[in-house]
Image 1 (cartoon, rainbow, N blue to C red):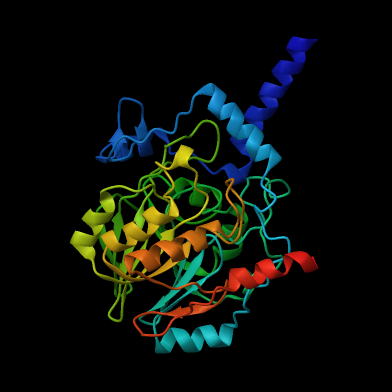
Image 2 (cartoon, rainbow, N blue to C red):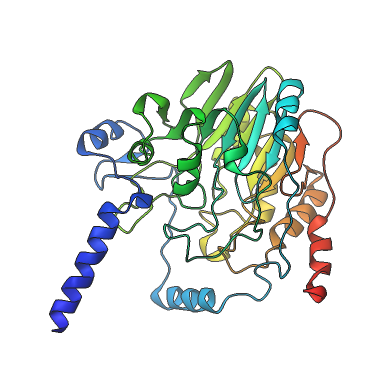
Length: 375
C-alpha cells in the first residue's frame, strides 16, 4: 500500500509539472541546440552558467536552519498595515508618455518606463503572490495595484530579466498579452510565453551583449549574476540578464536580479553613464549574496555602471528573505549618503522623472512604520 501511495504522489507531481501552464515550457531539443551556441551555455550539463563561479550550495545543516527560519518568519518581515500605493491614471500616463521620460515603480521589480513616446513594462509581475499557485505563498503588501492591467492600453514592449515567479507571472502575462506589441526576453524564455498563447513572431530572445533596435529605442542585453528556473527540473535552462535601454531623451539601466560582480563595471564602461538606474536591493542574505546583492553592494553597482540617479527595486511588495521589509531601502539610503550617490525613493505608483534635477526622496516607509501601533 505504501508503494502505491508513493507512486501515486510521484505521478501526480509529474502531471502537475508537465501540464500545469504556470510552470511554463522548457526549451525543446531543437531549441537547446540553438541555445548551446551561447558562450553562457555549458554543453556539458546543458545549462546556462554565470561568468564567474557562483555557488548557491549550503551545508545540509545550514539549509535546514534556513528552512526553519523561513517557516518561523520575521515579525518585521512585512508591514503590519497594508501599503496604499499611489493611484496611476491612464489619462496622465498618456500625457506624460508624450511629454517627458519617466519611470513608475509598481513594487518589487515591476516598472513602467516611458521614453521617446514609447511605453515599456519591465518584469511586470502584478500577481498576488510570486508562486505557481497564487493561493499559497507570501502575499503582496498591498491589496490594490497602482493601476489594474485591464486599464492599460497598448504597451510597446514587455522586457523580462529572467523567468522566476517574482518577475515572470503567468496571470499577469495572460492579462497583458493582447496589449503588448513585442516581448523582449533572454535566451530560452520564449517557450514559456509561447505556451501561454503568444505568437513566436512577437517574441525576441537575446544573449548577453546582444544589441538591438526597437521602435527607435536602442537596447542591449547585458550580464547579471543569478540563476533561473520555474520547477524542480529546469534549473538554469534559460538565461538571466540585465538591460540597457537608450532613447533620444535618456538612457536607463535595469539590473534584473544579480549578485555583485565585475560585470557592472563592464556595463558602465561600455554603455554608461546612465541617467537613471533601477537596481535590485532586497531579498538578500549573506548566505546567498552571490545571487542577490547586499544593499551596500547595490549602491556600489550603481556607481560602477556610472548611474546618475538610482531607484532601488526588488523590495516593497513581497517577503522572500529574512530581513525586515524596510531594511533594504534604509541601508541603501545610508550607503548612498556615505558614497555621495543620488537615490530616488518613490512610493509605489509614483512617477520618477528622468534627467531632471527633482525626483522623489521622501522616507515614506518610515511613516508606514508609524502605523504599526494603530493596526
